Amino acid sequence: MTTFSVIDIDTWSSGERLIFSSGWMVFALLEFALTVYIYKRHLPDMIDAFDNSPLIKSLTDNLRNQGPLTRSLSIGFISGAITYAPSLVEQGHVSASDVARIPMHVRRLLSTSSILSSITLLWVAVVGIFALIRGNSLW
Image (cartoon, rainbow, N blue to C red; front, top):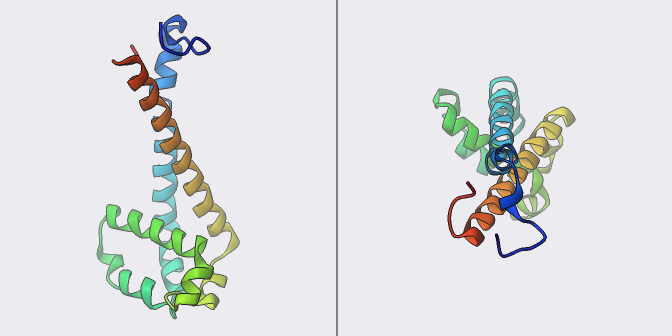
């Protein structure tokens, strides 16, 4: 029996334990697929939209020749630049007109990717906490 009497993992079926311990992988795969879709379809347009932004321009100069991992990381960086645009505009790293040129459907895709990533991290943290409480695996 676990430390928490409200959530007794020992009474769960093996299927429920499997879903609980590995369900985060579904969100991770969805986020990966969405990121691949974004960099295959929208990355060149996003790079072109940031013509007047020195920070993004310096990081994406040779991006078209890079591999998938570098492109995925650049998607996260551009998403962060759009999310935190007001502070980056104040510091002069990003141009406000460049951020405004990003289409709304691309912004929605980027925010969906961020939400999926957050859900994945939260789920992994909860599973890790339960594993620590039990003192061994969840099985």
